[in-house]
Amino acid sequence: MGLIFACSEPLFFMEYRNFEGQWPASEKVVYSLKDSTDLPVNMMIYIRNNQHYPFSNLFLIAQLKSGDSLILCDTLEYAMANAQGQWLGKGFLELKESKLWWKEKYKLPRAKNLNIQLEHALRFNGSEQGMDPLEGVVGVGFSVEEILEDE
Image (cartoon, rainbow, N blue to C red; front, side, top):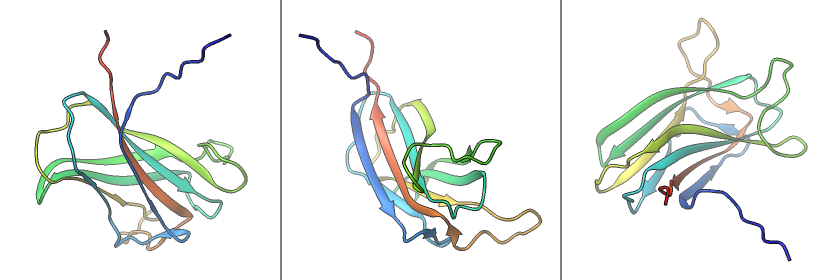
């Protein structure tokens, strides 16, 4: 009899926000962390896109806040397709899901009302206006994975 062990970090938080095939520029996706942890964490962003997504990359603005106080803010760029135009990520048919790193081995602050805000920051070259709406994004997820310390 064989034993199978899965090597994955414990999921501390995971939540999705789904869209009807497009992400309005005015809609920040907000996730509220009800609890905190003393363990370091990996913060991950999940993007579900379909064949209508018009770009090979994605720009996001990710913020960690405590109430109205900004703790952390990053502008992130992720590749969504390879050089041949094939979508990255996992999935079948026309829907792909990409798991994207935001922070690795991050220590969450001991603060109340922690929330994560994500917004897209895509625009055509030479344009100051962002894409509104951003076609092809059908879901945005966020997870916090606790990192178990070596024993």
